[in-house]
Image 1 (cartoon, rainbow, N blue to C red):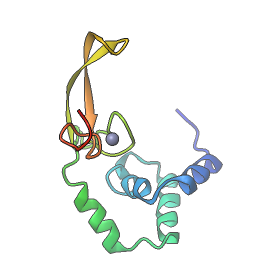
Image 2 (image 1 turned 90 degrees about the horizontal axis):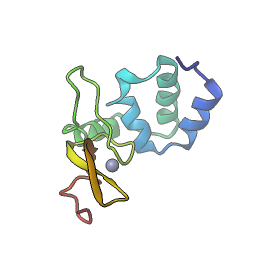
Image 3 (image 1 turned 135 degrees about the vertical axis):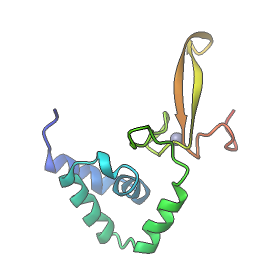
Length: 117
Ligand SMILES: [Zn+2]
């Protein structure tokens, strides 16, 4: 069990993007330390985030992939909540398929997203 480190959390929160903090304050809320949440909530208020912005953020995250226990699946490539998940081959040297693994993808990394293949 990791000990709660106030300094570490403060630095992390101050360096995080507002989008990231909004995700932690909303979709990941049930997984966050209460102490960390207080810091995140305060940081969002300090950044001037409005209730309308939080609402809009939540609406943009409605399609997130949730586990049966209600926790949210994170994108395999970044910190954003995943909107789709599926099996993909883990490839040795990027070529030889070794074993299938489950990959979760956010809106940016979704197969249907422009620029990804
Ligand atoms: Zn992603």
